[in-house]
Length: 65
Image (cartoon, rainbow, N blue to C red; front, side, top):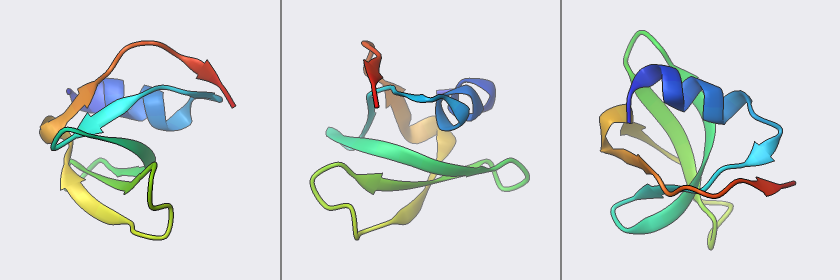
């Protein structure tokens, strides 16, 4: 995923599925300078970590939150 797409997803009012290492995650915030995203797995909302934006994959369909 590129940085602009990650920013749009993070700012969206809709839940846009994103995949990291084969698992669905939620993008909490973007560090534009470091080009990293703070994410948490949808199955473990208390586990947040930073990943390279380029390691994220947009999974497609939007869902209203």
